Image 1 (spheres, rainbow, N blue to C red):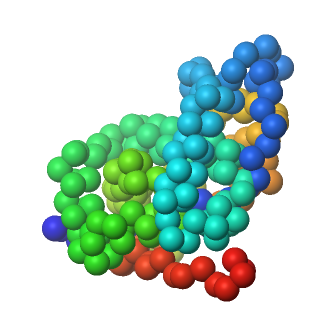
Image 2 (image 1 turned 120 degrees about the vertical axis):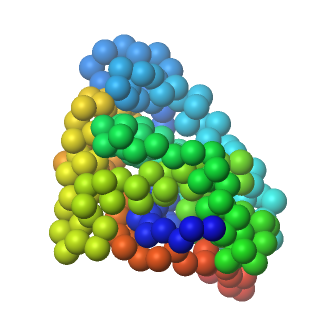
Image 3 (image 1 turned 90 degrees about the horizontal axis):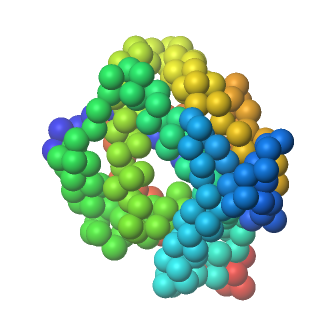
Length: 223
């Protein structure tokens, strides 16, 4: 596969605690809405389903107890992921960036080889990023979008690369007019944060793709 510079946006390993859900979003009554993004509703049920999908995958893992312990605050993290996806989509769209199915398949194939197999790749995405197996292609698509966007805005290899990418993301976030149910926290366009959730959006700018970290056995006593 073609090796490409990659910029990774990931949620923190310590995912935030799920918060109680409201039936209103912002100042208007929006029953069942966790957020409004670009005028489109994100239902509470959608967030709950995403969290449930991750929990089910964690429960099947040999490290189930540790994974669940480390991701106790899962619902807000899943809403954050949904917001991130929409922001990246908008920034990519504004820059004329597109990702083909072939690119996703090629990148995944390379990651499978680097990780030592499909099961190892799934375990790494679940442990390190809180991504369920059926959402890995979506995560890879986002990574490719960011890599291409970095090239498009001149961020690849540039000393101010992170700043250039952040400007593109902030502009996209503002254009989407993101309104989050206050019980999930307040979305901040400029900081790209949800409430007190501060995920490291830009992990690497010009780094070559690296093998995904291998899952580590849980420590005795669940520590």
